Image (tube, rainbow, N blue to C red; front, side, top):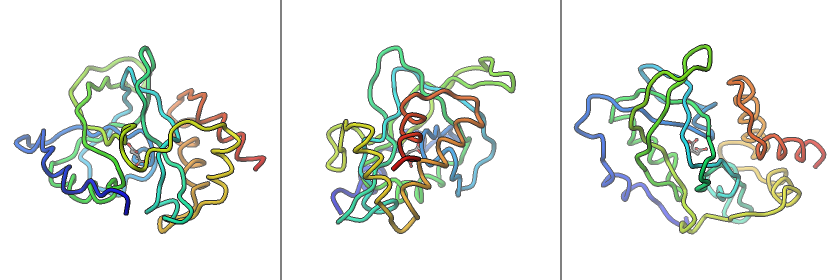
Length: 191
Ligand code: SIN
């Protein structure tokens, strides 16, 4: 594979001495929580925007025909909504394997939301970030080209289309507006 971040992430053990920590999911971690968590709560991070700019060679595509999955880019003033999970540090081992294709553990401030969408406190949390310098970072492309790549990609975890459709559905359920994701979903429908 292009880059396996599993071993690097084992060294990024920011919360290892804590009994628990908050993990913030902004992509498949919103709708595919196949890990043990103690509780979860909608939350957001600021200064980051969600983009389908990261290649997936291992889940939603193959090395020959990679898919495109979510990562975050720096965007001053932007708000990225997602789901925060309170987990124990041992849960990160399997998550490092799941997120190994270029994602690194990073610390970020999280703002929690209550049932009415009001702010419910802040805590430092963890994200998996595939930054612009990782080998699987594809970067910007037109909606037409991204939708075309997604429509044609399939991998061991399923179709790339399913990833995008499930993410858009989960964001709607959270009452979140995300122009990039919803425009891409619309483009995919006609692709
Ligand atoms: C995330 O969901 O927070 C990371 C990217 C992904 O696994 O889709």
